Image (cartoon, rainbow, N blue to C red):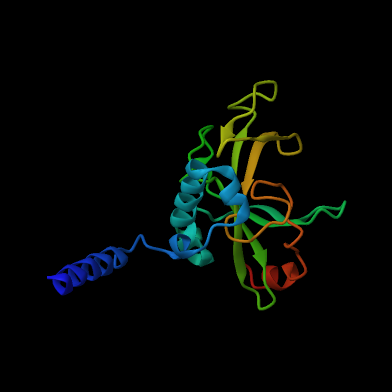
Length: 187
């Protein structure tokens, strides 16, 4: 009887693991930052990883709508780190924010010309949510004003550890040293 019960549990687990929604996002251990933010935010971050896991392949992201290059590769001139290249899905820039629908995907250029997914950014243009209003909130985090781009923004570094924090603007571990290699391959 115990053997049958064990086989049933194993079969159930194998069936659950064969679901295409199972990704490395579920297998990735939580960081100290995620442990500190609470279970609800941790669940939302896991959801975000699940919905963006396929976008490690830039061609998949591009076909899914994240094809508009919004910025060149960005590095903070004050030395706080980088963000990488921002690619946007214009259909999602509608003034709303949902965990499973980031407006921008951030890619770090790699040495061989590939793009590495490192983060997402949620944006709300001032035309939808005025600069004078209270900031939008997601993951329990208030969005930050970005007057240069006339929008509210919130980063989530779900694919590359950020020593400054999960929701910091700049990541000292991201750089643009290989941007010219990527641009010459014209993504």
